[in-house]
Image: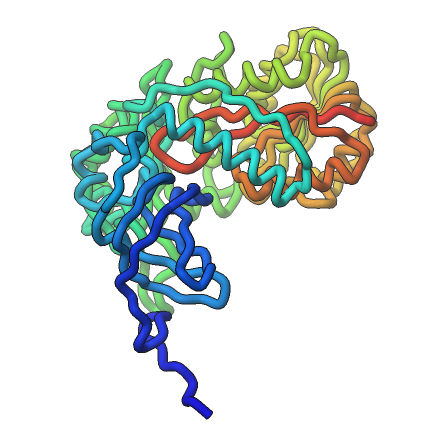
Length: 424
């Protein structure tokens, strides 16, 4: 009997780790997908469909392997020189910057279709390309790691940090903070600005509590005087953690929105505009009289409906609920603080749901179906969650009536998908 194989970094000793791979598809996360000689799938960061390369195997599993790109032998016509020097230096924040913008959007449409087919078990889903946003100077929210007090991002495929001097996809008001800001002893920082008002806000996260008997490091940030600074620990303590919750104010769909430091909002005002328009189109908003807005956040998606439409908005975050009550004060709207999957919200013409990245889950899908809504509009920011939720809603009596892919995160493999479901 032969001895069991020995492993080095997940690769069997004696394995030929230098192989040639042809990539035929992109996977979630932006990796190229190819096949090894034994039929096993291999994922290679930085490769594109149609390319062939010499790669170094770095990880071997029973059903798949991972590899690092060593030498491109056949280059895709869609490959471009990344426009960001920090990406070329190893920053992993934009995992598709080497793919041309038009091809990025096409790839995301295909990934959404595959998720609906493979995970949602839909035979022939209709998936459409929606809005394409500007690919530079866009993001009004960005999260950075902190390295020696300075802004940093993760190096590609590692947990190591690379300090950066700017960011190609980030709004200029935040680029200033990335380049010149000092974030003290924080481990991470979330930077926000308003494209409309120019307000800026920084949430500093110092990570886990200091060891017993020692206080948290006291080195504070050095930021411009106009920047509102918040400790993430105060936000985690809930609304009681702060006497006044700092906020910025954005303008989207002709309305002014209060966005507190603890509230979720889209990563750009332009993206929020595109999302509202896509939800309105999917809902057939002119025919709605009573609308459920599940996971409503600060109330943004209510802007997809006419002012005389009655809205019930459900949200669990105390910060977002407080913002939504301000933002929807002039509408026929009831804001309910609750976990949606535990709700019995009543009956509606249209139900809109914009859950967190993990998606609805079966319990929340059942609550949506229980509303009797003729139309459900699902907003998904994770393609696997889109597939799972679509399968659940289909099993609960709804037909998939089209998905629109919005490229709200240019140069990354992430996308926002707005899907219409019609009750059978």
